[in-house]
Image 1 (cartoon, helix red, strand yellow):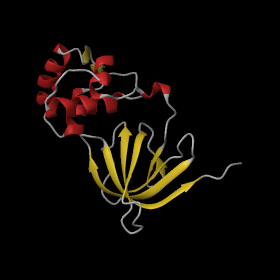
Image 2 (tube, rainbow, N blue to C red):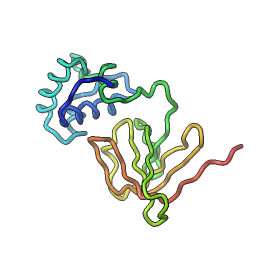
Image 3 (cartoon, one colour):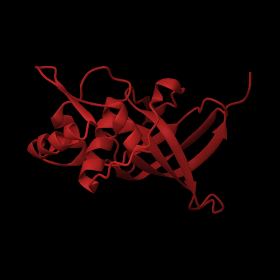
Amino acid sequence: MSTVQLSSTQKRILSSLVNLAEGDERAVRGRDIAEAVDRNPGTIRNRMQSLRALQLVEGVPGPKGGYRPTTEAYETLDVDRLEETAPVPLEREGEPVPDATVSEIDFTSVHDPERCRAEVVVRGPIGAFGIGDEVTVGPTPSADLRVSGIVETTDIGENVLLIDVASIRTEPDD
């Protein structure tokens, strides 16, 4: 992991950029980052200057411009690029979320069937998710695991959905 020390705001903005940039060749617009972290676009521009100075972000000029994370950004956040892994799909209300894939599923309280929760870390935008939405994660590449439930909370800055798990199942082998 890199030795660059980031403020909590810088880390949140950089994490959001990495999540929004995943799987997309286009630069991420500052206003998209601002929306994801609930900040003013001017604040994002100011923070991006310091992140560029740290060589964590590159600016892309022009009408289709914006920002791209550098390799150092991924190292600083200790995040692997998803180009080398299989995607784990995510559905909201029965419909696939095209620009999002799941990078982690952490279960909490699995011993209590009334309080089984999963923290789902998403790569891509999660702004459309709200409390009460039905979601399904999976199937995962190796175990064909599917997790379904209801969104209890979202953390847009960290790109995490907390799900009240209704079911955990594996797809049968053919």
